[in-house]
Length: 461
Image 1 (cartoon, one colour):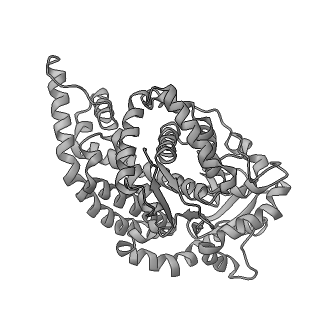
Image 2 (cartoon, rainbow, N blue to C red):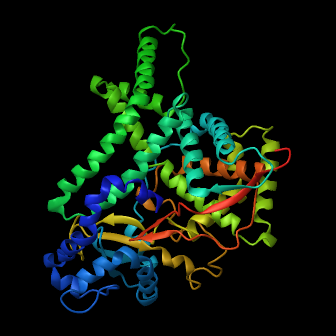
Image 3 (cartoon, rainbow, N blue to C red):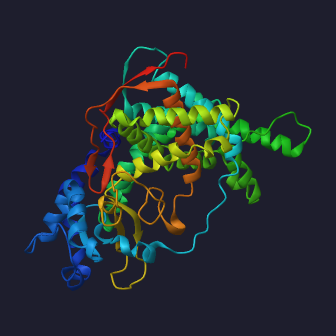
């Protein structure tokens, strides 16, 4: 819910329209092909002329419940079904048996892992800085707001890789980035929930709010970008120029801009906008994943010794790496990797995954959105131990599937492993008797901004 609250003041008008007008308008999608939709298996659609309208309104709070109802009724029988959605109109939910058919096209993955060799030590260093600021150095117990802390720690570490110093240590710049990302998500939701004819209006309102935040971001980052561009130009003009080329995302953006041989691509604002986009699509999802993991670990059964097992593995691997985290060392954190993926499986970002739009008429109308159902994670007929196992097959959807799988998953997983390693090696976590639940809004599962844990610095860490 914290993501929604950050954009509240600037999204009042879109929100009012969203709650009272858009559901009614979006429910009229059935006029495009009423016979088709009325003939399909559905969940959440009432009887009578207003069934879709009521269902669309109810989808704001009932999508999570409908997902499990639809799985039991239809997905287990290998039958796709339809759900009303305030954000996307009618969506078709694909049963797990058909995921390979729907998503299993040949993959073409860009090689994004080679730079992790250079980035890993830097990410580890910036994570340490973030932890000390948010969790502190005291060996006494301290209450920590999980979501806020994860956002701050991850945004600093991510930008150590994205743009380097001094921006990655500039708290004002990092706060502006967090504001932009947490406003961007509810803004996109409002636009998606708007009928097509009214989307320019909602887009303008959302864009106005984002523009205000962008101005703040540019004020802080443009001087750094201009300086970087000047030094890059000097080095290209004079190879003897005394300057070491930084190895970070900002420099790679500049190098790519030079590679296309188009001066317009080197405009400082354009590069700054790209830096914003990289942040929007990365650290927010990483922050949500690690905050879920923190709550899962804190609320796990202490008798099972999960945290100590993770600590033992991290200590052993770091010792073998002679005290420095490297890409190869991180790749040997098998238990940490498994715990991250299991947390992603048990506490995913949303009720549904792998959204796709049908661009050509096949057996459902063009422009229909297609989803898969995360309820399959609890199906004992598909997994003998659905609460305690994870496999990297078509049932694990944390990073997507097929050729549209998350292109940044290697970087994100590397960063999350380092996040867990620093946590368990340097802090004790007090057991939570009950795990705080995420906030279900439509098909999204928003982190609770009030969830807290108690931590303390380990003696000698």
